[in-house]
Image (cartoon, rainbow, N blue to C red):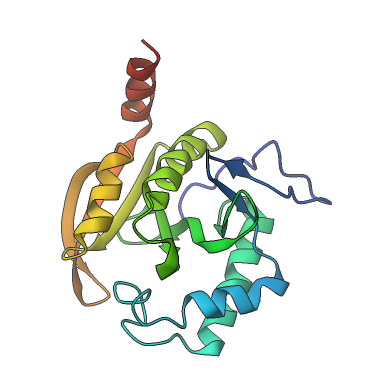
Length: 195
């Protein structure tokens, strides 16, 4: 899987933090086994899955369970995973976080929102915060994000999160556009915003 990140300081072996990060309107928490109905409901909407595997169909229960198990396991092992995304009042609106990609190699920022959460700016809000969190809490030198090339809304989110166009290639037999941000670029942008 490449270079393993340093285990984030906030992560204790015996106790997982309840809230990993907050924005003005959103909070991110680790998934738990009991969250299966939430994840299944999210991916039961064909429109939510349009640009994700399995495509514009409801996700099978077995696949949703496999993904949830992976999210829980990855969080426990490394502190980096796809996490539960809620409003500050606890309403589940989707998932967001990171997963390791083999080709091209690196952690990928990803999110999936319930249709009722679309058009509110949540994707941009959480993507920006996840980029910040990634570079402040891990020692990786770059972060990737990609979307099916026709998914212009997601490509705009990546741009607004401070990522730059990097690569076009097929992924899962679909033309995809990749964005990337390096640690140096992130630090330069952060310094400019403070001035």
